[in-house]
Length: 450
Image (cartoon, rainbow, N blue to C red):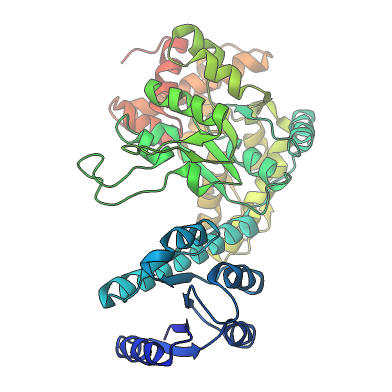
């Protein structure tokens, strides 16, 4: 049962309001002065406070400041006469949830109370989710020189307010790098919001990022907060930024330059304080030359750049990541697999990992599930992983050029995947853990028809 504190020096009004709210299922406590209310707030737990603006010992603004010091997140609704409305609006700016005018309309006060409680619960759930995400996030330090370079760059840029571009193939862990930058920044106790721009349609991209007002388009049945508002004070991570619609790029440029946004259908600007980190699996400078990405936005975002290399170029990291994913899979699946056979370790070092770290994580989780003893053997690995290597060895001449070997393996895996899905490129892209745009680029690069 939600507990409400009613603060008013009129006993008759308090009794009337208490009776009404009790009948609606609330527990109500009365306080007839500011001093009495502050004592109650210190000693008892309340879900919301209803406060008259004019009290014998303090006015509503002074009391609101005192309440904020004791219980910063306690929702407060100001009750006021029509003559006090301008002052009540000041109270809203100081943190009050809402104001209602006297004489009280029962439906109005009930709607305000329920709205305040719902908002408080949403903020509580958001805080809990962010805390859980922060607790569950674990960045794995690699053993290679390239991994050390990435971590050094993270340490350098994290304490600053610079925008960052993280570039790397799909599955290389770009979001992990972004989260690490956030955790090592001065914003670490604020929200970290991640948006997959590749999943945003042209019609909904603006609404998702900046929000919309009710009635601004057919499906806008309520006001909506965008990701900028939700990440205010913290970090907004825009994954696959190159897929963002061109029209939305202009709004993003304005938001980053002016630190203000405007909701779709809205008529007022909203100030925001958000650090932008973006990720891309293509060179954005090439996209600028092609005219698919705004040059001014590129230069605004490119204050610092981190290249995350593919797994095939991080030979010394393979065993480190494999061991980490083995531990995660054991914990998730309730298994006790101890290690990998030597044949599996050899294969993992020879395989090209077209899906990078994400592919490795999925393969090891599957292998742990299939393992019948304490060791992962070749039989636990996907057949296509073994066959891809065998096909590469038999079709192509022997070479010691690692880049050529990696490209040959990648070409073979792409062709094999396309054949399995009867050249359905959307399905193939999902199986390969890349987006369609990347797949088409690979098809052109390797001269694959279909």
